[in-house]
Image (tube, rainbow, N blue to C red):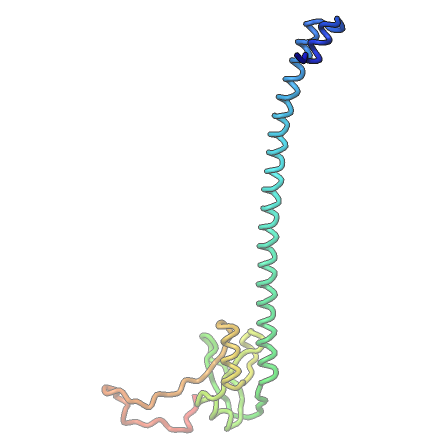
Length: 181
């Protein structure tokens, strides 16, 4: 039969039972600490993984914010470019009044542009989004701007309805074509 090293050392007299028990205790203690240390290592690894996942999520959110800001900036640049490239330059002495929010604004145009504006063939927009300076643009460009930004100020005159209501007290009175407000 094969004897363990401890039994062989006891048989030869190189060690005694007290030292053998102490060595056995130490061995068990080392095994127990090794298991406990593995748990600590696993917890540390789990915490490190969690911190890494949180950092990845924060970085992704930050990148999404930066991407959204860049896209918004690009849309604003596209709108400014559309307005700049398609502005109809007008010099005239006829005042054309329109509403910008709750205020009535005025641009000076010639007779042809005034007619096209009042029929809804042209639009008025603010290139700087400040509603202090205005540009006259074709209707197609106004639609392209609206596709990019619904909040952008664009004034398009509504075509007056030719239908007369039955109980309209002013139905018999015609509005003169040269009337300007």
